[in-house]
Image 1 (tube, rainbow, N blue to C red):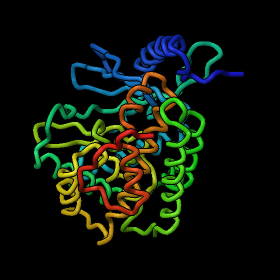
Image 2 (tube, one colour; image 1 turned 135 degrees about the horizontal axis):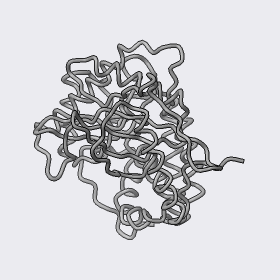
Image 3 (cartoon, rainbow, N blue to C red; image 1 turned 180 degrees about the vertical axis):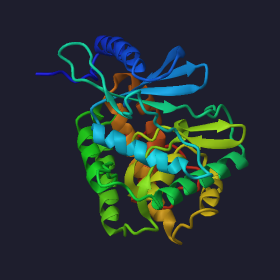
Length: 340
């Protein structure tokens, strides 16, 4: 029996994982025609990432978990290559190893599965460090609109394989959250989450996945996946890219924006791609969906528990507004007092 390369359940296993990852990264680099000068660990998440600097440029090295197959990772790179053909877009793009491969399987410690490794061209920019200007927020909307527009023109190759983000994936997330919600929710609060999930699923069934509303999306374009070079935003980390509603992507961003900034973002988006006239109620559905999925992602990590608890007065206020059919996305929501 082979162990998964990614073992994250204890602090000791995370430490051992990062030790294995260092060796995998150093092994992988030797398979590229890159004379690296410095390599720096960035973070451990769904992938383990490093920033690599050479005399001629900067690169991102990713060690992938088994969440996605080699074919799915290759398909992500196919989409990124297509997006970079547009004069209006600059996104990370994979580079080939010395033998022409874009996704490598690297040997590791005996008994562990070989992880896949990719190296990408680095996109210059900094994460938002303070209050964003209206111009920045508008341009973020423009950027997302262009991504959807260009991805819509992409003709995927026969082997293209990316996940679908919708009712089935959300139901799977809810099943996962059911196993770990007690770390930050009471049983009564969990009933609130279940009611919201049921409403989300019932609304997803009624949506029409046509070319104007559905296609290839980033699927994780939250504030941490924008970088800014002066006032220009760039999208990074397409690791979750797949098929879904465009409003799902919008919800990922506006979840991190103040209510007064959400209209500006949408105005930027609609300067490129028009939304249907009654988009607000569907956007609010995806807003709550993304919020719940985020909690599912973090609930299993005990280091995140205190943050999850501190967010509940606001999260449960959004859930109550959503369940009462009260539009909330452009209004300042008051946190629940004595939340459950």
